Image (tube, rainbow over all chains, first blue to last red; front, side, top):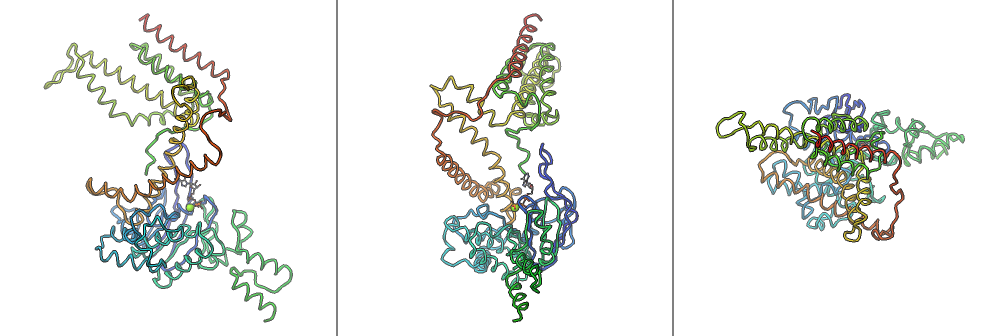
Length: 282
Length: 265
Ligand SMILES: Nc1ncnc2c1ncn2[C@@H]1O[C@H](COP(=O)(O)OP(=O)(O)OP(=O)(O)O)[C@@H](O)[C@H]1O
Ligand SMILES: [Mg+2]
């Protein structure tokens, strides 16, 4: 399974008086099993980009290939694609509608034509995997807290057994613990199910900690694409486009300037700790 | 997906028409509509066409953009013209089966068609050059003398909130549709029953979000001590300037010419 965008351009409002180019010639390939992070300031085109992955948006120009096949070719089964590439939107409120959590999670598999029993099995499986407690399954999704709603939303997509999971700011509006919980669950899914993950986030710390590759968006362009270490080494340039490296990277740079023999490319607290201890001769 | 709907669409541009006081534009539109029913014969329609053409030119709104608004009434237009053609008694022009098209009928149909087209173009020119906020503002001011019978301010406030919410709810609908499509929902295929049923996953989140928004807005207004129209002044009150008087003169003059032409010819 792989997704490839070839020179994709997308403009909003092509038929009205205001036209906004949200993506300007993006080429990107996400191979099987990768954990990718997408960062960029507000309005840089991240949400637009991820909606191209499962064919919710049709590029104004350019191609989107899934397993080497053009998804906009005549007769391509988009519904199948959407079951393979699961997309969870920024706001869980946009998709919850059933009277209880379990039936809401069943909605996806039901659309794929599974029987009632199979649906429930898949739904229970997904709910367990996102770590939602059993006592909530029969509650109305609207009675849950923000973090719980988000879990239900993720489970709703996960229940379709996608080969790739795309999450648009899954941690927005959550407390630090809820954030770590969700991200740990996502990492776990990545490891146990072996699915690829693409995650949109504003937190550099989270990115450094979880992802293996970072894609930076800026005004519809993609100025950086590489491992967190590579991308954050451009921290001066990142600042120019309204982003920053993790705070720990700044500390390491200051320490290095002060003459301490630490490596400046540490991006997580763990790496920094090791590097500092080594420099201190422990 | 929903980009074809163009309710209350505003075309931003820098033009004398855009800068006019919205009250002038509402009154002028009404006068123009009256003039369409005054005007008779080719001379009358030529004058109306000339007046409308000048306004369009001054407004800097591309002509194609205005004509797009006509698409919505094509069916209405065809029906009106057809019935006028068929049901007007007079000298027969063409006759087949039980339908008789008369000379008078054709004349009437053309007249109605022209009137309807001008009417739509004229009023869309108003909404294209005036923001919904300006419009409600102007309506509030124009209806002020009726303040003792109807709660003018409250009605205007409700109108502007409703207009403000249309694009928000459309965007929300689009987002919810996508979120459900990502879960394999299908809004297009199937028979009527299936289509209606497939609306549930769309309507429930939409209603919940609309109620939540309404609630939030009421709360925010109360937090800022909103208490209705009594004793409320405006931040930017509407004031007439010389171009507004000139526009009034032009439009009344135009109506005068229409009446004169009608009497003379
Ligand atoms: N429905 C729309 N109509 C018109 N323009 C839009 C629409 N949605 C987004 N845009 C524009 O496209 C650009 C990219 O938007 P997008 O939502 O992809 O940004 P984003 O990176 O996801 O931002 P955020 O971090 O705020 O979620 C923005 O400039 C935005 O104004
Ligand atoms: Mg976004």
